[in-house]
Image 1 (cartoon, rainbow, N blue to C red):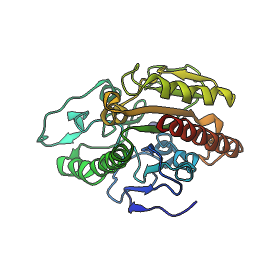
Image 2: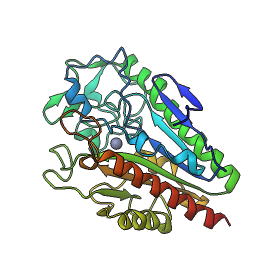
Image 3: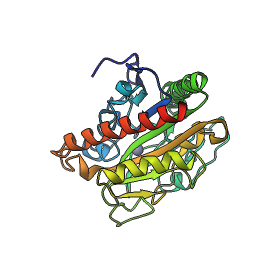
Image 4: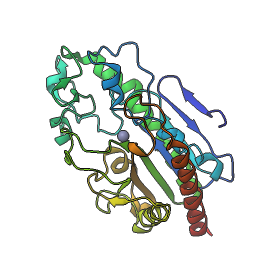
Length: 288
Ligand SMILES: [Zn+2]
């Protein structure tokens, strides 16, 4: 793996194409484990790790070699979640008056807004409300730079090619937990989401599903995940900005006890290499 082209310590890194540039951007917002010094929580590291999409950036590390750009967060999602809107915030978390309008969604209701209230069901992350300044700091120092870097990568590719294909990459627990819509349900190998057709052209999600199915994976579309803030905010298919969300089942690559790579990691990584090669090929044909 070559070194990152851009690093904001503790916040993010970006790796640029090392082959002829193609309008392919892959971002991983939830793999970060650089725990900020002011993350004053009351839960265990094991509980925190359940919220990390561990090694997802590594799974897509082949992206620059096919001409794509890879962006990954270094901060933990339990600290501030880049896949939620800034106003998807629970007023009950705050010690003080919030200076902006709030728009809490169902995710905040489940304790999983832009600042999480619960790490697991019934398990509050904090022992007391957070100072407003602390929450503003998390948004200004982590959330906004991540979105700015993603927007810049997408804009750069779009400016050069008039079109861009973006994958927002995650991993999911093998079974939905009580904080999820699919509590108790076993999940497929991969879930692809485009907010029911809103965030990308059918051909992009169709080709991605086809490659993954050919690799032997059970693929579901928009079930149980529909796609969240990142694909919604950064897509605009009408102007050639196509985004899809991918959720990979952690049972394929992660030890559930230690959160280390399991013996399945290398095979999955090789298959994700194949996926990015096939998607680069598909994008190249659309540009020709
Ligand atoms: Zn995630």
